[in-house]
Length: 429
Image (tube, rainbow, N blue to C red; front, side, top):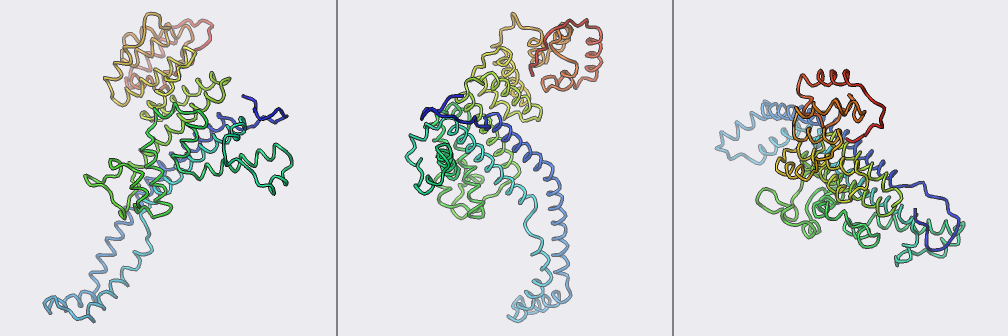
C-alpha cells in the first residue's frame, strides 16, 4: 500500500480494501439476481390471475341487467342516446369496474422497475467506495481537487488532522456519488489513472441505463429532452421508429437482464483495473481472484459476462502461468457455451501444445470435445494429483462430457485404478 505523500504521520491502516469492495459488489449483484429469478415466476403468475379476474369483471359488468337495458334503449334510438342514458351507463360501468382500481400495476412490471433502480444503485455505490478507498490511501490526490476544502467552522470542530482529512474525503465521496455517470467515469480515467476498463465495457449503453433509471425516479419513465440528448438514436428505438419526448419506456425482462449483465461486467472490470493500479503488492491475489470470478460466472451460465471479464483479465497478462492459462480456458469456455465456434477455433490455435502439463491438456481436450484423448490423458493427471474426481463432476469445463451416461463410470474406473503419487494439486478451473 502506498504511503500518503502529504506529510508523514501516524495513521491507522484503513480496513477498506478492494477485495472487500469486490466481495460486497458480488454479494449485492448475486442477491439481486437470485431475488429477481425467484420472485419473477410468482409475479408472472399473479399477473396471469389478475388478467383472468379483469376479464371476468369486464364480462360481468357488461352483462349487468341495468346496463344491458340502457344499451338496448340506446340501440332502439339508432345509436343516438340522450345525455341522461349515457351518464347512467357510465355510472353503472364505473360502479361495476371499481375493483379494477384496487388491483394496481402489474406485479412483474413493479418487480423489474424496482430491481432496475437497485441495480444502478449498486453500480454507483461501487464507484463511490472505490473512490473512497483511493482517497483514504492516497490523500495527496485531494491537493489536485479544487473543491477539496473544509469550512472553518467544521475544521475547528475536528479532533485533529486525520479527522479533518476524513471530513474532506467524505464530502468528496458524497459529491462524486451524486454526479453524473459520465463525470464518475472521468474521475477514474482522468484523475485516478484508471482507464484500461474503457475498452472492455460499453459506456454508451451504460449511460442509457443510468438515464433510464433517472426517468423512473423523476419522470415515471416518460422520456425527456435530457434522455434524448444523452442517448444515441440506435439505443432509443421502438421498432423502426426513434422514441420521442413524452413517450413512456418500460423495463422488460429482457432489458433488465441485458442491463444487469452490462452493469455486472462493468463493475468487475473496473474493480480489477483499480486493484492492479492501486495495490501492486496484491497483483498475485488479484490474478487468482479474477480466475475465480470468471469460474463462478461460468458455473451460473453467465457466459457473456464471463467472456467480457476473462478477456479483460487476459489483457492484464497475469504473471503466473497457471492463472494465465486458466483465464484463457475460461475465456474459451465462454465462447464454446455461446456457440461461437469460429472464434473458439481461432483461440485454440494459439495454444502451444508441445509441453502442456496433463491438466492443461485435459482442458484443451474438453474444449475440443475430444473424448478419446481426454480419457487417455485423465489417468496421468489423476496419478499426479492434478485433478480430483469431484472436479470432473462439477467444473463447467466438463459439462459436455458429463452428458454421456458412461462418463461417471469411466471416471470412477480410472481413479480407482490410478496409483496416485504425492503432489501439489493444481487448481485450474
